[in-house]
Image (cartoon, rainbow, N blue to C red; front, side, top):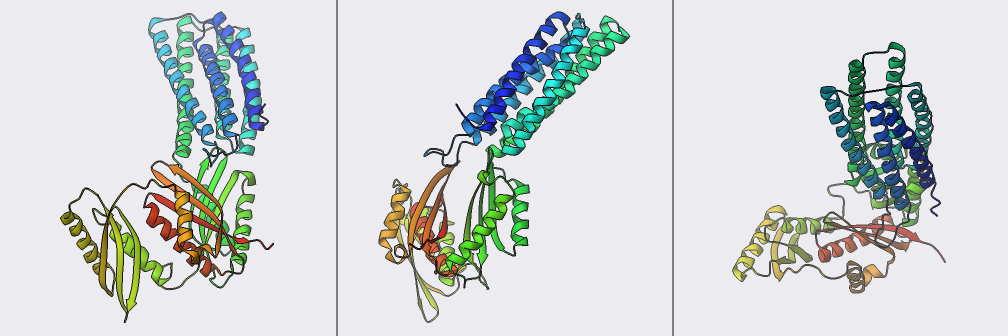
Length: 463
């Protein structure tokens, strides 16, 4: 049995909905009221929605696994979207039925029993909407919040139907007036439900599309400002009740890696304390604060610029093995470009000539550019295997870091590789940054532009 508290809250809501569906439908059979039928159908929809919610939160509560490294939180968003679509369909049917009744006529019989049923519905809906809302707020569950919104809207619709019943018992309006009032009320309730479903579906789609939660970004910016920390960039997204945050901060290059790690730990704890700690997954990347133009050292900036300029040329599918040398302030560049293997040697040579011209035009002091042409083949190697092959080929990197974990994921057509590595605590931030930037560049050259590489460093604990 799933022990997640969200599942238990959804289960209690399911039992309450079963009871309401039964008494509302029986009341409709005795009265013939479209408003009560609308209420009965909506409660039936709530029953289906609650089943979806129960299933969604039970899936979302599962821990991450090898196929779902970021967890199963999107199940809640899918559940919320399904609820919204069901609500729209039912609302449109009720509006259609209301038009039919107004034009063709119908019989409505309202009684004290019907009033008692609606009062019972009001009491149950109020109790569980509060319970669901409190649970949704506590556990950050969009599926439970969707249910809470449903039952909050039920309060309005049930109250409106109760008002019609009381009016009919006191004023004894004509049959035609009562049918008209009943049908119009049912239509207004359905329009209100459609609006609610739009809100639910928009939120669900936003999270399924990883729309940036602006309030979270603003909170992070405010915290870093209060802590006098320089932030280069921050990204955030939500998945169910989970918040994933990636950010880059800048610190003094004179700090060692252990001191820099303490800063990231403090910042991470402050941000997590703003939310439920277990619901926040953070990666903070540290870079040295540098003055002057560019964010990296001169050689690193130049290599990146060469790769970027070459890759922007039509026909260049990948760039690798960039080699830069200097002679009397002049720069010689050697690089490999990959092109379509079906091109003729003449077509490939024209692309290489464009690369030479563009590099000389975009970058000052380049004297010679030597371009080696290779056929491009989609990379079939395992990214993790490539990582360790690079480390084996470059002992200057391998001797200074130790891989702690590697996580691969895919969103749309973009692939992500998140690496956590351990490095000696007395290494300065600038030294650590230079090491991991080298590794990033080697990986990008091997894996291509479709990969986003993020390398997080932690100080190696003393044994």
